Amino acid sequence: MFNFYPGPSKVYPEVRDYLTMAYDEGILSIPHRGERFVQMMRELVGLLRTKLNIPQDYFIFFTSSATECWEIIAQSLTPHKSLHLYNGAFGEKWCQYAKRLRPDSYGQSFEVEDVLDVPNIPVEDDTDVICVTQTETSNGTQVNMQTLLRLQNQFKDPLLAIDATSSMAGLNLKFIRADIWFASVQKCFGLPAGMGILVCSPRTIQRAKALNDRKHYNSLVFLHEKMLNYQTAFTPNVLSLYLLKKVLEHRPLIKAIDQHLVQRAQELYAYFEEFADVPLLVENPEVRSHTVLAVKGQDRWIQEIKRQALQQGITLGNGYGAWAKNTYRIANFPAIADQEYASLRSFISTQYR
Ligand SMILES: *Cc1c(COP(=O)(O)O)cnc(C)c1O
Image 1: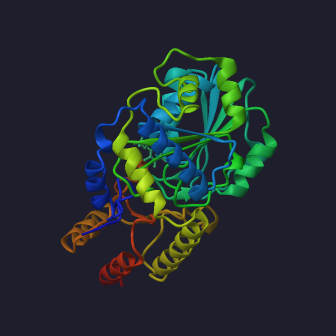
Image 2: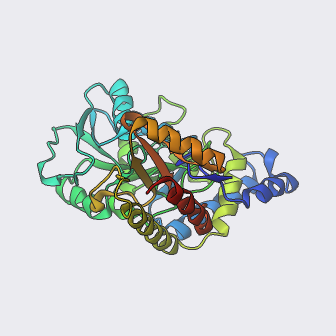
C-alpha cells in the first residue's frame, strides 16, 4: 500500500519498532513530573533545535494539535484582534476560529496564483498578530521565506504567526523570520496524529507575560512556566513525545531533508507538466508548495482516478475545501520513499495520454 494522503499521512516504518520499544522501556506509564520524563523532554527539545534549526532563544512547547495552537494564539496573544492572510481552507478556518474568540479579528484573502502583496496589505490599528499559513495544505500553495522577511520588515509591531503544519520537519524554515510557528505531527514528521508543536520567539513570551492570560488550561504563560522545567501543564501524550524523539534521533539535518524534498517536488511538477491534459491546480511556480501537490480535473474524472489508484494499492489525497471535488492531492513528505513516487508515476502514466 502506498499512501500519498497529505495528513494523516504515511508514518515512518520504524514507528512499528518504536512502539514496541516504548512499551518495553516502560516509558508509557512514567509520571510526567518525574526525573525520567524531564530527561526525555530535555533531549527531545535539544533534538528539535538541532535537527530543525530552531534558534537557541526560541521556546518550544507541545500541544495536542495545530488547531489548539490557533486557539492559544487567540487566547493568550490577541487582546484586540488578529489579521489573517489566506488563500485556502486552512487559513480561512484559522480566521474563523479567531473571530469567534476575538470578534474584531479580520481576514484578507488573496488569489491562489498570487504572491502576497506585502506593501499593500491593509493592517488596522491594534492588530496584535498577523497570521499566515506557510503551506496551504488545501490547495498546494506556499508563502516563501522571502515573503515572510518582507512581512517582518514592513510590520514591526504585530507578532507574526505561521501555520507550518504541512512543512515543519520537511522544509528548512527560517524560524527567525517569524515569532510563532506551529505544526502537528501527522504531516511532515511522519508520526501518528495527536500532538502539536509550538515554537515561540522571546518577544512572543514577553507579550504573553505582559498580557498574563491565565483563564485557560493551555494559556501560554502556563505552558511557559511548566516548560522552564521541561514539563507540561497537563498530563501529556508520552507515547507521541517518545515517538517524536526516536524519529528525530534517526533523521538527517533539516537542510538535507529540504534539499531532497525540493528536488523531488520539482521532478514531480516537471513530470505532471509533460502531460498536455493534466492541469496542476497552481500554475505559478513561485507559489507552488514543495510538500503538497494538487492536480486538477473534471469531478467525475478525479473520482475515477482515485478509484483506479486504490485498486492498485495507491491512496491519493482527496481534494479539500473549495477544491474537494475537482482536485486530488499528493503529499511530498519525508516519510515517503523515492521508490514510492516511482510507483506513483508509473500508475499516473497509465491514466493519462
Ligand atoms: C492539517 C492542518 C491543520 C490541522 O491540524 P490538526 O492537527 O488537525 O489540528 C492546520 N493547518 C494546516 C495548514 C494543516 O495542514
